[in-house]
Image 1 (cartoon, rainbow, N blue to C red):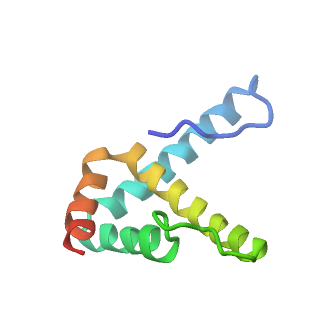
Image 2 (cartoon, helix red, strand yellow):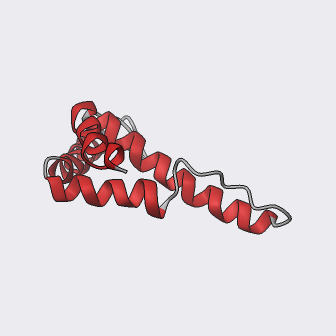
Length: 102
C-alpha cells in the first residue's frame, strides 16, 4: 500500500516505527471501508459525483470557478488513487457496482 509516512528525524528509529504504524493504521481504515458495499458506494459517490473526477473543471470566463472545480476534482483523483493503491480488486468492484449501472 502507501509508504507516505513522515518523520522529523529519520535517524530516530522510534519515530520511524511510529510513523510506519500510523500509516499502516490509515491503510487499514481505507480497506475497512472498501470491503463493504456501503463503503464502496459512499466512496464512489464522493469521487465521481461530489468531486466530479471525470468532469471538465473549466468554467468559461471564470478562472475562480475553474480553480475551485479543479481543486475538488484533484481531491477526487487523490481518493481514487488511494483506493487503487489499497486494493485494485475492491476499486474495480466499486466501479462495477456503481459506474457501469449509470
